[in-house]
Length: 315
Image (cartoon, rainbow, N blue to C red; front, top):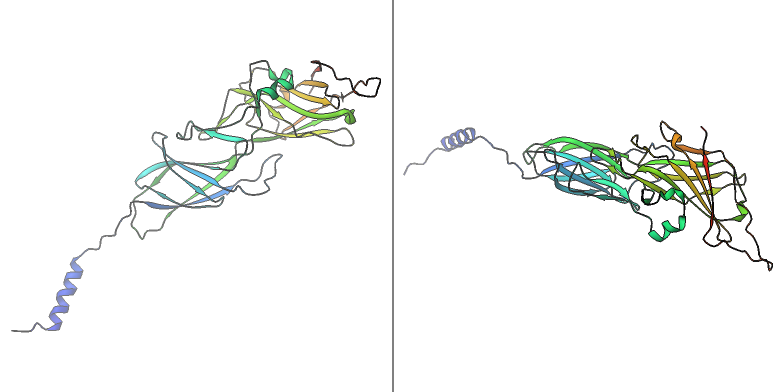
């Protein structure tokens, strides 16, 4: 039996390897790196810390339907996606307290809104700000940082190909406003203060970033009065809508130390449009009188009767 020379075997192996074309393996999932940046320049609001968690939703860009989601740190991370399709991407912070989301399964329908105040609480306000049954009264929203990417195509790739890198900046869909009432006297007679502003946008469709043309009244109660009688407060809102036709009424609801109510109503309609500093100013003096006392020195509260004063603000 003849032995085949080693050089012939080597030649055969070289020819065989040269004739075989290497085909790279492809992967069913495509690893995407999503880099997230939070825009912290906000009028009248300071971002003290980054959100604790971000929700990243991937929608079919053709029909807007939910495909998949991931929960990432505020700086981003890796996401596994099905390749060879086009996505619309929506990213928002998942740690809000008063702002909540609905219709999350559709890119063009998902919207942010906030909760109604309790019916018993609304009754106690007894303010013209309720507008009867025309508008709901809601708590003010906290900031929702939203980022969007449209028509992102994820191609098929080989297993050793580098990942796709996506960058998204998340900006708030909520505005922060300041209320300043220049002079409040009778500070020592005040027990509690609440405020309601009517006819602000009810919600925001965060996919296309569209404010609702349905309106609500926003409630807030973080007012402070300094030694000079300046009342200040901060409130958040989904914003003013140019389609509003009703007057926007600010109601300051004071309850004195005897439990009596004093409501001051101000038409602030002209203070919302084109107000870049987002400050509502009240120049009218507000006086909370000393409650009436009985002969033994105790207070005599009024029964089912609130003082109400309506004022138009001259700009």
